[in-house]
Length: 331
Ligand SMILES: CC(C)(COP(=O)(O)OP(=O)(O)OC[C@H]1O[C@@H](n2cnc3c(N)ncnc32)[C@H](O)[C@@H]1OP(=O)(O)O)[C@@H](O)C(=O)NCCC(=O)NCCS
Image (cartoon, rainbow, N blue to C red; front, side):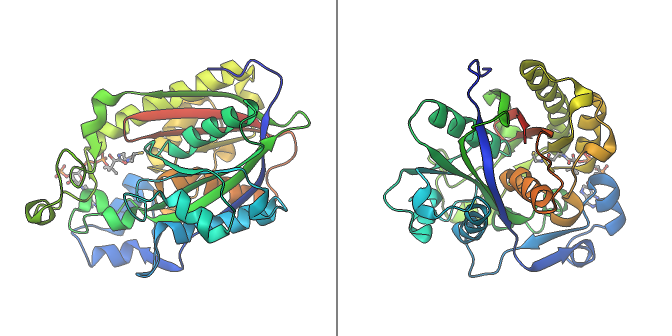
């Protein structure tokens, strides 16, 4: 729903971390039947980052979170809740957010994970906004962290070229001025869940030798179906959230779309009527990092000084579930 009150929640710090190791399209040509040309023209991706063997999702989240706290000029003890959006937790349980809380030495604050498809970071932002405006917490650390390369079938050329590892984090608190989240829009359609799924390892198909042999612990996707829904829903969400914020399209300074495919990004920008130079793209360098894409993009823009006070920023995402959401904010 739209936020009715004048009170707003704002992002006061951003951070990101990506592993050092780069996997290029040329590297993938040696692994599966693909070409750099196919990957670049069909997806826009040129390279992606791969976590080291001894890294887990909470390690990526920790490094991104420390940077976000530094950018907010805060200590871990200044945070009241931690929400981590992820599909690749360190373990089923405990939650990766709890491991992050311990890693940060943030004290005994509540910490939980949120599974919202590639939209998870935006879902987490909206939840955190509600907690802050509802007076439940004063400040929130919201993280999108992912190691999709750990759930990738490296023999499936349809999917293994798409994904990468990384984390992005933001710190939120109530705004004292005009800046902050202006409106949000979030939806889901569980009927379409099987089109993008990790089939085994849960209560429906518990892990056994057979599920491992059949690679059912890796991501399965009907890519072209997902593509069609993503373009439609991201355009709808973007339109709706701008309407709710009372912001005209030409007032948007940055569209930060989920980075799943360059053609989805371009189609979303075109449908929303937002010119290419205002659409932030980093998919060529990182691939699809799921929930980490948007906070990583926010941090890149922020650190480069390209988010000016008063800028209107539109965040827009789509993912497994299916889920989709958009957030309009004034920087
Ligand atoms: C996955 C995706 C890049 C595939 O692109 P596409 O244009 O839809 O391609 P298709 O799946 O229709 O496949 C077209 C052909 O390319 C082939 N192909 C697929 N991957 C390939 C690869 N890495 N290298 C070479 N050829 C490949 C297919 O086998 C198919 O060949 P065929 O026509 O002989 O059967 C695209 O559908 C996509 O990005 N989907 C959305 C992904 C997404 O958003 N996921 C996360 C949710 S947010």
